[in-house]
Every structure is written in structure tokens, then in C-alpha cells.
Length: 156
Image 1 (cartoon, rainbow, N blue to C red):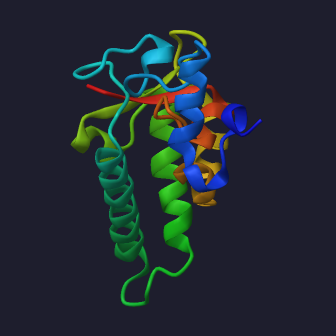
Image 2 (cartoon, helix red, strand yellow):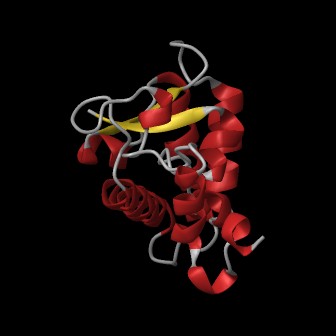
Image 3 (tube, rainbow, N blue to C red):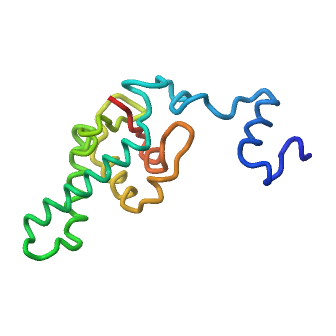
């Protein structure tokens, strides 16, 4: 039985090795392979570093915009509202946020070629605000909020 299941001491790679021995290729060779994406270049799954940088740029931009309207006081919670708007609205219509434009990544639907749309963009933004759905990934480079909204972040 141990040969089939492995031990928790063997680590996660043991499960993939056991699956390969049984003829199943459980782990793709690169992120996005199972979705038919290229390994690198335009249209490939966006790397984590660029996604994180885009998120930080959006947060800083939201803080600066809000500070301009609330000066001399600190923006407080209003910067969260600003971040929500500068994330949900552009993703709805263009598939990008200001930070994504800077890092050359974009959001696309996995179920069609249409725009992301308001419902998916709003749900994706709400789930991003909770942080956890945005930082748990699968082997295709999609996080929980991407899978729930049937989207993926791609490189340009």
C-alpha cells in the first residue's frame, strides 16, 4: 500500500513520481500546459513576480489618488475603495489594471474570447481583497480567484 500512496514524509514530489510510475502524468512540464498555453512569451501564464509587482503598483496608485483627495489627512479606508475601482473597472472593459499595463500582463477568460465582464471582474477583485484566494496556485499558474471566475493572467 505504501508504494501506491507514499508517505507524508516523502513529500509532494513522491505523489507525482507514483503517478508517473502508474502511467499518469500528474504534473505538467510548465505552467499553462494543460490549458494549451505556450511555455513562454506572449500568451503564456504570467509569472508570479510580475503579478505581484502589478498588484503593488495598483495599491500604491490607489493610495496616491486617495491621498490627493483626502490631504492633509491620511486616506484611511478610502484607499481600499479607490483600489477596488481602479481594479474592477479596467479589468471589466480592457482586461488590465494600471499595474498590469506596466508589467505587461492581462486577464483573459478561459471559457471564451469575450471581455472579462463586470460580474467576473468584481468577484475577482473581491476575492483578491481577501488575499488567500489570490495566493493559492495550481500547476497552471491560476489562483483560486482565477479558477472561480474562469480567468487566467497572461503575459503580453
